[in-house]
Amino acid sequence: DAGVTQSPTHLIKTRGQQVTLRCSPKSGHDTVSWYQQALGQGPQFIFQYYEEEERQRGNFPDRFSGHQFPNYSSELNVNALLLGDSALYLCASSLEVGGSYNEQFFGPGTRLTVL
Amino acid sequence: TQLLEQSPQFLSIQEGENLTVYCNSSSVFSSLQWYRQEPGEGPVLLVTVVTGGEVKKLKRLTFQFGDARKDSSLHITAAQPGDTGLYLCAGGKDNFNKFYFGSGTKLNVKP
Image (cartoon, rainbow over all chains, first blue to last red; front, side):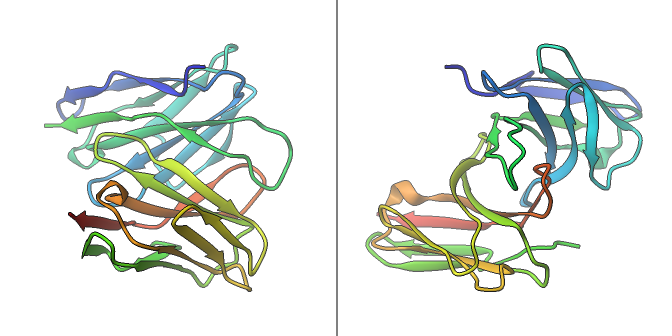
């Protein structure tokens, strides 16, 4: 049973460029959340996708956008990259069962470096 | 602003010692999760607590959720080098899996 997978593993971009990160959820999961983890910090919630719609959003600018596909995989897009966007980007998947919490499983992350 | 404050930020101890990590907030959470993260990897869920006062044990790890659901602690007995890692607490505040993470406690257990 494959867990959450993310690609690429590492990425180097320059300021002003655009980047797309990809995530495949754990088998059977339908919800994908994206987090940004700066060095030495805990993950910060970016947004969550369920049924191909953005359902929740954290305190991130519109430069951060996403998409969820019918197979539940997801993409995170960041436009006009800034140096401060350098971080580990984590994807977490879960199965929506309507409870007060649903267990999240994290992928290994994509390390983005903006020069 | 971090909703969850973790302490201590760093902890370096000898194998066999006991330790406690704290996760505090002024907010009430519907659930509280603890994760361990190793370098280059995503966080791995250790436990979820949902009831105020709840205590859960996972081998040498004991987790407690505060009565008011605003704080939590993680106690490790007889720490081992394999316990080394970044310990993160995360509080859930609604039904849609939006979790607020603390900044983590970096634990180093020396053999």
